[in-house]
Length: 389
Image 1 (cartoon, rainbow, N blue to C red):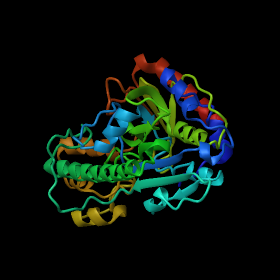
Image 2 (cartoon, rainbow, N blue to C red; image 1 turned 120 degrees about the vertical axis):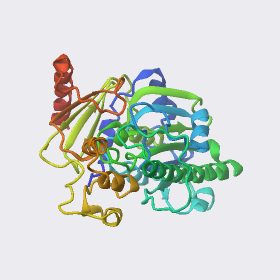
Image 3 (cartoon, one colour; image 1 turned 90 degrees about the horizontal axis):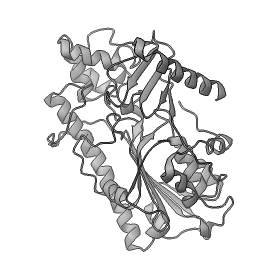
């Protein structure tokens, strides 16, 4: 379990540079003075989809999703193409901190967010979808999607991805209904809206890993009247940066120090590993390469029904799904064995990927003599960060 950061850690992290001219202006545009009165502090709407991530290094929807709300926020807000979560499965670190500074946190009653507000109290409402097993028997549209090359392109996998797509589209629709209600009530102008994903998509080699499919998430921020919309940032942006920005808006932390950010650091505890991500490379240090990264394989023959219902039957760090089941049942074919090994096999102590030419991180360059200097530089940076934190 990943622990929530303390208030001191959150404030310390505000010194992390945001990078680029756009980000240099973001924090001052959003920030409220420390201890600002509630009248100066916006209400906050967090739209968080569990298990929503990009499938690779590029912030491109390859699944053909119909995301009208996300598209609206991109038009009217600032999109961040290189946003990363710091740790798979980490909890949102700032909700408790905001509550401690006077925000009233509303989690299950949007009517309370619209009316009956406590006098002089800013509000925070969080719509958070939960990843559920994709067991719906309803027909799904598997057309207009690209299956990532680390998964088999089969009807079962396409149907599974289409069911996942439907879940995220439902979240987008529900988020849109909230925005519509705020707009009709004339209350959208004082709302900071943040829409993002929490954790990688729940497929083999996605959720729980430090590959981009496990850490690279969509992120858009809209603040009507405060931020000019229709802009895109390509600078690296971490979940710690997002937490610090939200705290700034709420007047709960010191103003941010802005500058250039060249790396994002991520970590996993279920399979101990640390990673450093730059615009060009992903370097992963696996601390215990003798362990199974996705959990141990089955110790005896298992049926598809067992794989679907008992997470511990095989590779327990991968949630049950039609994709997982079909990959395990399909063992014996060379192509399937290669993909299953990519998702579940033991990994070397060092992994290095050129994310520009290898967006799905399939070609490990750590043993390439030509990459020796790059590997040493990134390893030194990662070691320094680990020592400092």
